[in-house]
Amino acid sequence: MNGKGLLKDIRVIAVVILVLAALVAIYVYPTPAPDAGVNGNLRYGLDLVGGSWLQLRLEGTVVGIDAPVSESEVVNFLEEELNADVVYYRGEDVAVYEIRKIISKSDLSDVLQKIDGSIAKKPDGTDFFEEGVTKETRDETRRIIEIKLNLLGLADTNIRTVGNNFILVDLAGVDIGTAKRIVGEPGKFEIRIQTNGIGGEVEKGQRLEEIENITAHVVYGSEGIDSKSVGAVPVRRDENSPWGAAFTLQEAGAVALRDAALKYGATDNPTDHELTMLLDEVVIYSAPLSPELAQDLKEKPAYGLRAETGLEKEGFERAKELIIHLKAGVLPVNVEIIGSGEIPAYLGAKFKEGSAIAGLLALLSVTLVVFLRYREKTIVLPMFFTLLSEVIAILGFAAVIHWQLDLPSIAGIIAVIGTGVDQLVIITDEVISGGRSSTRMYHKRISFAFGIIFVSATTTIVAMLALALMALGTLQGFAIVTIVGLLIGIFITRPAYGRMIEEIL
Image (cartoon, rainbow, N blue to C red; front, side, top):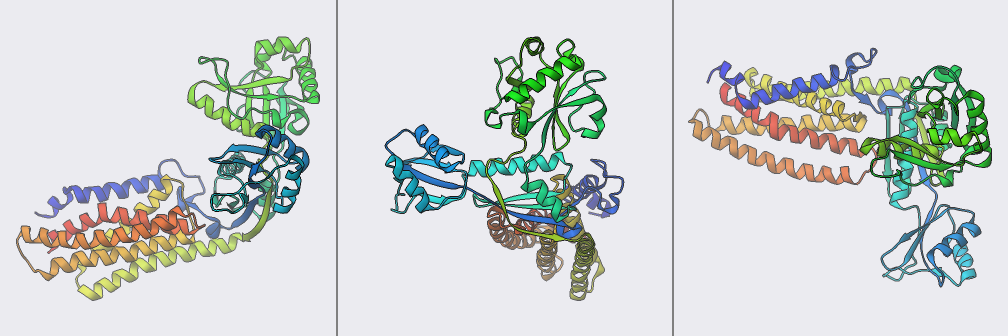
């Protein structure tokens, strides 16, 4: 087969397509920001661009309780005695309660004595008492933080959970003071009403300054909405009705809404006087009053409301998101910032430059070593471009899934280059050691080489999976990049290299 035949080989074509697809993902689609430059759609963690990191502890206690009263009575009793939210979860053998504050075991035992209750025992005989929160509460807290950050346009964020009571937040490009304010404080929820223009002018995602001239303030969430009344799940009248989020206005909120609706004409023309909700001065919902509600407001304040978000799955998901917003961004449990830090932007830029140089030097160094080993440029060049295509493919993968590249990720790319050249050397040595021979014998030697490569790659992937699944902070980046690089290598680039070596030798 000649060189033209090599270009028609499916294995070589697969590598070319992979590299082109990666370049498209990085530089073409979606269209990069105007100032992206050589970075394209690649995203970087705070250690490469600067920013802040926070370590949050979720304050709570999960306890099993034995008591001679019903679960609802236990919940009401503890909420009154401890001045904290309490949630009941049905355990396998015992009633489990999540107390959304930290309390010592001795203090809780003293409180439970008032209802002849006690802390339950686990099957191993130890007390069913743990500091922390349930997985459901942890995930809800993480989701609220993510939504708040996304609303503020902070796309370069990374939120990880460790155990059931710790959350790690990376905010690239955000100073430490702003990071603490955004994550550690409740959001500012506001209801406004459209005063001018036509319906549809106020859109989700707009900022307050964009709509301030055509809307008027009605009430802030902390004053007008009973956050405890917000429904936990989306609701609808029947199967053909739109989904919505149900909530109840307090007296001040109900009166303020009625006064504003009458003043600005929403009761007579609801279509052009939409009710708008904002969180941290960003529009999260805007829609006209229903005809029934507009008519009711002419006579008296309305307390129970439902903000409709649309039909089918999209409407359901929007309603779930709005439920969180209606709680004014309030986290289900208090969070304590137990650790924080900041990397200045200039230092992050230095790290990025150093990482790029390190990656390039690694690629050139292994190429030089291979050249000294074989003294044959017809072998070195295919090996170099094979490794380069793997690096481009990894970067393309990162762009597609919006993975933040950080220092551990760069270390993973360098590790892929190292393991990659080892495997390419195995293929090359197996081919060269047998000298020129028949196609059948060549394929036999290649199969032997790939047997070694698959075993080596499998053991490495298994080890990296442990790191990736254990969520050990930034080590995830190293593990995931290494796994992706190895999979690309053994299934795409290594077979193509083996075909090129066959053509060369």
